[in-house]
Length: 292
Image 1 (cartoon, rainbow, N blue to C red):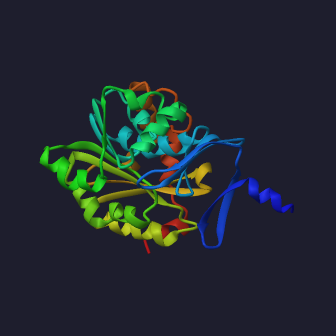
Image 2: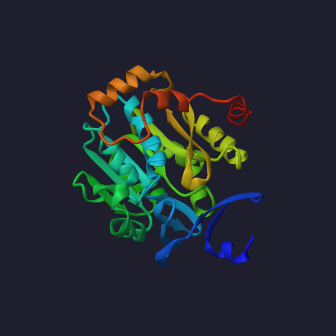
């Protein structure tokens, strides 16, 4: 193969033995913030995509694989969601999905790096669809740890859903996936509140997936893992919904589709009742990773 081929690729590793790539296309912007390096590309396969420290974050053509599945299984299960806290999520994609639920009155979005929000406003309107400027959204440029441990409790905040829409649990972000932080998030939930995060690729990082499941089950009575293939992440990807009261696995596809109709959830490209049921169906190899 011509060595010049590799110069045209954006590559990411899944572990020390595996990885994947996309052709670069056009570099729209790159830079360094106080927290991380960023790149915005216009690629042939996925349109505009965003990377932080060399990791793919979001793209305009496949964002719905991630954002719809991160948000809707929990919010459709919750009977009347009104308040949502998103830690991370500066691209606005998760907020956009939350706002599809008509009962939602307020989202607090806590993003560490203001540059992520600014870049999303400039380059990724097709991801956030204006949600970053919705008057129901309160954006705080703040450390998520500090918000959950100090600011939220001091203000008496309570949320029906808390979403960790973060980078992988590596380096400084690892603490936001700890049992302590999960318990602190739980303290900010309403009765019936739910907690959602991504838990990683079970094929390529099984220890991460099983470790995060262990953390979750040490804090919450109900932990429901589910899996979806995400093109930008190059793998089957795990997410989990946790609660002490609400279990999304008890919602059948007919009930889910009825709620989608009743709430007039618009412009869904992935999520429906059958998909909801299927996501929680676990192959035997996944059961062994999740429940060793």
